[in-house]
Image 1 (cartoon, rainbow, N blue to C red):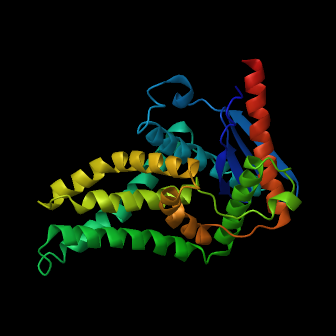
Image 2 (image 1 turned 135 degrees about the vertical axis):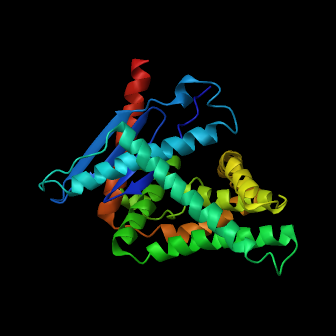
Length: 298
């Protein structure tokens, strides 16, 4: 029996693309002088060492944390590439990187959990139904996410990142369809992909809307603690739904499941230029090469 093809996914960084393989984390960036910078490292993940980490509803939490940690670190590396030739600024160590990720997660929780709840509490005098308040809270949360994405999409630098995001998806589409990894074969593919991190974020918000709708409201402390406690289960459920939808994308129900995320990628991805596709191909090639070397050495 032929072994299943490894799934590749990634993210856009500054003038570049990161691709995660089975054993390898790879990145390619365009240097200021036009050259292509290639980088890869061996993944050291609990998903490779622990059966528990690979269990459904556990693996999603592991992947989410690793994506935040690796993504932040390689985003900073891509920024360093763009600053080549300028005085080097001090870089945070492992503890510093963990602190950056923790602060980022904390701010996201304040904005997407705290603000919607507190806002709806102000309506408590005119809306007595906890269910209605929870629905309004969920709609505010969805609005904040979409509004944030739309807002940053007007920034020129972010628009370039979104174009690299599109190049990443198109390249993975071509790979998954066994097409040659060149611009001619990659360009016909869509910029949206069902396994996208943007789709995951939207799915997290939508799952939270459903689960939080049925929660009672007691007082601000208990309610916020309960919502924060549910963030991890919500992320775990969302990951499994996204994985299921991506693996059965031709099923009508699964297509409906991933459709909102595909629509949102109309904002978070853009049609790339050919040099951007070249970068996405370089990153995927590094990830594939690293995986093959690891498999050959095993």
